[in-house]
Amino acid sequence: MDNKETLMTAFEALLGNKLRTGLAILGIVIGIGAVVALITLGQGATQSVQNSISTLGANLLTVSPGAASQGGGIRGSAGSGTSLTLADAQAITSSPTVTTVKAVSAEASRNYQVTYKKENTNSSVTGAFATYLSVHDDTLAQGTFFTEKDMNSLAKKAVLGATVATDLFGTANPIGQTVQINHIPFKVVGVLTSKGGTGFFSQDDIILAPLLTVQKLLLGSSNIQSISVQATSSDVMTTASEQITTLLLNRHHIKDPAKADFNIRSQADILSTATSATSTLTGLLAGIAAISLLVGGIGIMNIMLVTITERTREIGIRKAIGAKKKDILTQFLFESIVLTLTGGILGILFGFALSFLGSKLLSIPFTITFFAPFIAFTVSSAIGIIFGYYPARKAATMQPIQALRYE
Image 1 (cartoon, helix red, strand yellow):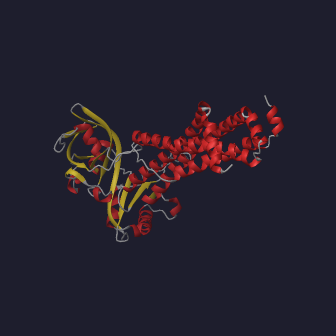
Image 2 (cartoon, rainbow, N blue to C red):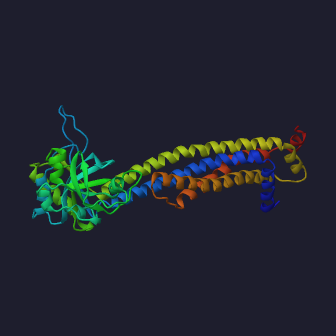
Image 3 (cartoon, rainbow, N blue to C red):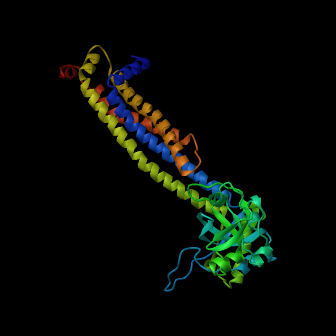
């Protein structure tokens, strides 16, 4: 019996009991589908994080304060300190020793309830320099941005993110209108171009205002939470970080760099951390989903063993008329492989459908790569061979006389 005839025989045997075959395939479909969906969603989440970080600004360095001391040797979380000042940001801008910096923006932010007439939203209100647009590679969809003069005069001007503008004004023009931020009126002078929100965080859910205005009227503090620095090019990011570190260590009178009361991170650092976190989570979830593949494989083995028991007399008859051990082994192995490959193909389609729906619900990119289906197809093939070999071997090693006597 050639392979083509053996394959046709395997199909006929599987179609002879459609319910059992369908249940066996279902276990593989669920397992493969879960693995494909989780891997694809994980890749989409990673892409979303990368896209979001890349829009933070070109050649961006972020200087943040170190951990605050809470007494008794206890340190707070990173960035909880108050070591950075407005003078530090101004020094980075004007220092002759820092030659690789293009623009600087000191920033401080907090979430506030923002209202306009009967509409309201809770958004992040960020006080910044007039150079914010340049540093973060942002643009205006309409209106103007506040100036350095506005900051020095404590002007109550606000630039809305795209999401905030839509939440408060819908399709109406917000320019010139007044919004209440923590019950303090701010005149809307501009709207930022949308950078696209994600399921993790949205850069459009923000309100920008002059830093000194936010510090005095909202925060009630002169501290800043970060200094965003735009390097002159991507080639000098390391040099810029070193120059800023040296400057701030001298300003803060710190001799040992290991005791620095600030941190400097680049986009590459943030991207690496975020990608590592999403990849680890994706691997963990895919590993959990893969357990269902093991269960599906065991289910196929059980069904094949039951099938062999039911077809014992058939096996005996085939052996009695000349079928070889290899023929019996091949037939039952083919049946197992057909089950798993059919389940694998359906599982891949099912997994992509799940990931498509998930990407829409989570607002992350829907990505299709060859990695997930390749892994799924390889695993399903392996399951067919591994879990199908024992039942097939058991059928092939039956003695013809014993098989014919089986009732």
